[in-house]
Length: 178
Image (cartoon, rainbow, N blue to C red):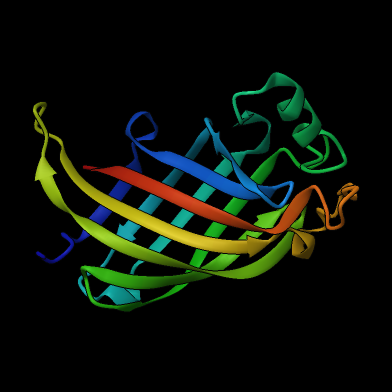
């Protein structure tokens, strides 16, 4: 895989995805995504000197079910009225240009916790309009209780309706800024 070209890149939200999955009823996974987010990638010549900043509009959650989305926006989960914006700020990057770990701080509901993202560099290209792009795939996991998101319901057969672990699935296309 080639080296990530240095520069400042803006996340192209039309060609990127911030998604998640969570265990439901102990037997299935529910998927969701956030439709409003933005961010900047500052790629240095040395990976360790690079940085990422992302903001997410919590109210843009979309699981494909309006009733569930309304519940997620409530004080039981995301408290979007008092915490409308979430953020991720990277603190360190280690590994190779093709696969690396991005360590950072994730803030949800006013609570900031460390998180590690496993990142794969998918390549760099000039698109049909002459824009220089880079692409990445990333995964991570968080414990929702760490961010004060503890709502749950017991199941008749035992256990709880929702799992505590949330898997993050990110696809990023970013455009080099002049």
